[in-house]
Image 1 (cartoon, rainbow, N blue to C red):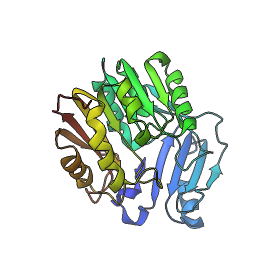
Image 2: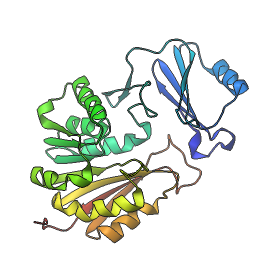
Image 3: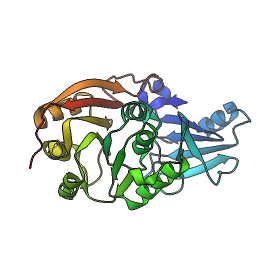
Length: 282
C-alpha cells in the first residue's frame, strides 16, 4: 500500500505498509515514535481487523500487535494463487510483494519448460511456474524449513507435487547433482542481497554465472534479480558481461508503479537473458 523506502516521500522513507486482509503490516526502518504510531492508527479504517508493526531497525526485528488479534492463518493472494505467511519466525514473512512482476513473467513463460529455481526461499516462483504449466521445477535452498513452506504453498494451490522437487543443498557444492538432473530451459536466480559467508554478491555472482552453462539447455534462458540498497541497476548487467558473455539481454524490468523509486538506480531490478551457447560443458 505504501513504499516509503523508494524515497519519493522523504519524511516517510522509513515506512512500508503491506495489506494482507485482514492484517495490515507496517514495517519501519527507524523508530517511528509514539505520536506517529497514534496518527497512523487514527487513519486506519475500522474494517482492518489487525495492525502489526515490525521494527526492522532493531537487531531482532520485533513485531508489536497494535490492534486486534493476529490470525492463526494468513495468506498473500496474487493472481488467484495463495502463499502462506508467517510473522513469528523470521525478519521476512515468506512473500515479497515487489517480486510480482517476476512471478508473472515466469507464469507466462513456463509452459512445458523444465525450470531450476535457485535460492528458492518459500518457492513463490515455483508456484507461479507450475500454475503456468511448467513440466518440472527444481527448487534449491539451504534452508530446509523454508522449502517445507514451499511444499505447503504448492499444496495450497492444489498442485501436483510430482512436478516439483525440493533440494536443501548448498548451491556451490551441488553443481554436479544439478548437472545430472538438468539441463534446464529456464534458471531463476534471486539470491539474498548478502548472507554472511554463504552469499556475498561480488564474490558469488561470478562463480555462479561462470558455471551456469553446465545447467542450461540449448538457448536456455535466465531470470536474474537483485534488490539491494547497495547494488545499483548496472551491477547485474556488469556481472553477466564479465562472467557470462554468451548471455544476451532480452528484457529488463523493475517492480513497477506500485513501488516507486526516487533514484531509478535503487529498488528491484530483473533481467531476462537468453544464452546463445548451444554446447553444454561436459
